[in-house]
Amino acid sequence: MDPQPLYLRLANHYRRAIQTGVLAPAQRMPSVRTLVRTHHVSLSTALQACRQLEDDGLIEARPRSGYFVLKPRRNSIPPVNEPDIRQTLGAAQYVGIHDRVSDFIAKCEAHPVSANFALAAAVPQAYPMEELKQAMTRALRQSPEVLVSPVPPQGHPDLRTVLARRALANGINATPDDVIVTHGCIEALNLALRAVARPGDTIAVESPAYFGLLQILESLGMRALEIPTSPQHGLSIEALDLAFQTHGNIRAVVVVPNFQNPLGCVMPDAQKARLVALCERQQVPLIEDDTYGALTDDDTPLAAAKSWDATGNVIYCSSMHKTLAPGMRLGWLLGGRWKARIAMLKFAQSRPNEPLAQIAVAEFMGSRAYDRHLSRLRRELKRQRDLTAEAIAAHFPSGTRLSVPQGGMLLWVEMPQQVSGTDVFEAALRQGIRVAPGAMFSNGARYNHFLRISCGQRITPDISRALLTLARIVDERTG
Image 1: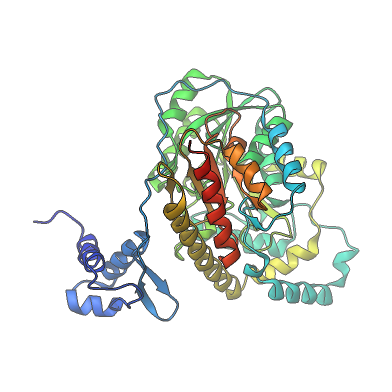
Image 2: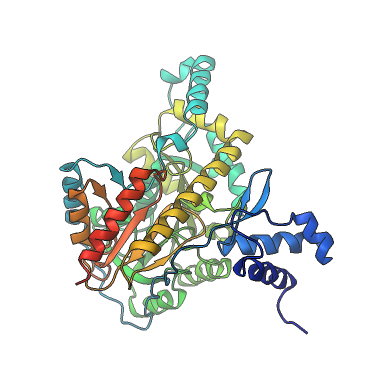
């Protein structure tokens, strides 16, 4: 008897048809109901098979049209190397990132840009500008007093209600009173760290890690202990457990379980549950950054690590910056058992957010229009990510590695070892192209031969030419 699940056997049947050319690129797949009738399987089995083929990059779903066969990538490219979790962890560090980020910003500002692969955001046209403008106008017309009235301390109640309701899809049970609205996810992380740790404390972070988090730690005088992180499965639970045994002063763990920045990986649900349980056993707060979680390729929400939290030990941070409105700088958090302290710190640090944007966003996020926007944004980002990955696979030099995530907008590119990401960054700037060099994502030097490439820009002939230029710059440095 075949031990494979039925949906995998069905997916493999059509995989062979695609690979042998029986089903050609751009050809329509049999409908899900046709698969049910033809193969005598359940609707859920047929859907699972199609989603498996979609995950494998062989077919794509088109709204109201069904599934279609995708053109195969011109070149294959191996995934990014896995970290060695047996290596001794480096010492926790205070400093190192501020100067690098400042240098990066200064150099970017000194050169005109024609293609920005460093900005982790979609183009303005990908966001619902007109709908948000109309929502702002309605909010001001219906509640003009918001401009001259005190602001609720934790945020506008309408937005807090919508956020608590939306969090149900990620497995989180929260009340509107649990929600604290912040100035983006950066302030949420800042508040969470200040609530649970003090200057001099050690904070365990992923390696590589978002440079903004490393900047926060440096600003707060805290040490970053970098934990090996898989480009496929996220932070290593085994390495973190070992760190707890060998570094007795870890005061918090910060993770991005869904579409980690810069790796783009998603931590499997079983790993999320293990992580929450480990931190609870160690009585160490877990701070979760879920900024990118809504950008999964399909419309199935990803579970938050917070959904396994039964004791309030997880502080959940998120924002609308990547998904809805980069210009509004709206974020939010669930403080768990530190909620009262975080609310006090928020009041002391920055006072409440202004309410007009909150009212407008609450109206939009409370409607089906928000779901339609997310579906459009996900499809656009997937197309741009696939085309960018295809260009990298086709044109970057031999030895390049790339793991293509199933969502988000970031690609983490491992170049041949002798290529310096900083050199590539500087040479690309001279051509009007911005990328983020790997050195920005660690306090050490282990990612110098990496680049983070954002897929937020729409693929135009100019962007395609910029990717070819970038590939040439890398190729020239392979020696």
